[in-house]
Amino acid sequence: MSDTITSSQTDEAIPATQPDVSIIMPCLNEIESLPHCLANAREAAQAIHAKYGLTSEILIADNGSTDGSQAYAQSQGARVVPVARRGYGAALIGGCEGGHGRYLLMADADGSYNFLDGVAMIGRLVAGADLCMGSRFAGGIAKGAMPWKNRYIGNPILTGVLNLFFRAGIDDAHCGIRAITKQAFLACGLSSTGMEFASEMVIKSTLLGQRIEQVPATLGPDLRDRAPHLRPWRDGWRHLRYLLMLSPTWVFGVPALLALLAGLVLMGGAGTEFFRPNTLPQIGSYWTLLGGALVAMGHLALLMAVATHLYSIRQGYRRATWVTGMVNGVASLESMLLAGLGLMALGALALALVAYGWVAREYQAASSLWPAAMGVMLVQLGLQNALGGFLMAIMAGHEARFFTGLK
Image (cartoon, rainbow, N blue to C red; front, side):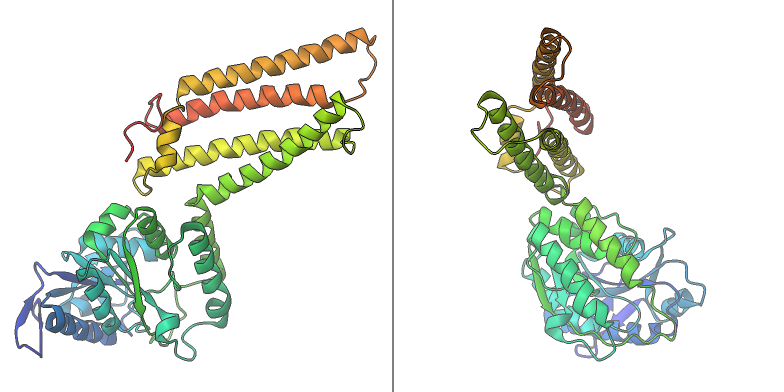
């Protein structure tokens, strides 16, 4: 078969050498379902040409098949791109990088998706969208096409968490048929090799402010006799951990604020009891220790939140915001070192007063643990601040002003 896709509607040859659309399938031993999928992809290419006047190529991103999938695909006019790095995400990244089209339409090669659903997706991209997702819940899921734990537990929970963390506003983050412009794909800098690739694309597109739209898509039972590559519990955890890794606000920022609030309340109450006894309900030694630890942990988590935000902006998949600009006005290695040294000096002074009081009491135990806890906490905060300043300077590319030049 030649390297052209012929449109039955127009009787015109659609060249695959410099196409407008790349229809991409990841493939690992899919010889059973490839005949159906390739025929379906050709139908979609013809429909795309008839509706939008766009030419298409069919590309198989082969991940090391040993069943003859490559030869069969080539015999049917598809282009095969070998992808050495293993994994679902790796195959799709390799396929998208190898695609010649300015629009990329991708779906699995197991026959569960209908490439004709991608025609509307290409239309959304032509109209200005950067990414168009399919929604199986809007389009319909055939009986037996999706395990109940995926349909009613895994997918809704993971999509809900993704929308909570990143405000993507979609209802099926893991739909396997989707379309993205080549420009948007390259801007996202995707790197996930496994099933979490599906989440990464949506998350990074959202963080970059790309325009995301959604159309209905159908899901049918796959055409293979063997078990699918998907492992629900393993891949579900991989998706969840990826959501957490890309959300420093929820991993570090929210716990930091909660710990700081609780710790400051406890330390404030213990301090009030120390200076003005019986003003508030008594905060004992155990609670005082907990309060100091919570403040220190919250401060450390806050530093990690800022550092990881800085990293994601430097890596290009998150945009700087007005908060970044505000922080840039005061945050530098020098300012963090000075603040750290100041806190350590205050802590050392507090501990010196504790030692002086111990001697003055003729080495008897103190009535309150608060002064010692406060001194230790201040020294710890100062040290964390100084070390955090160096960490952020290193992550900023060895720049003393961490957020300078970011967009």
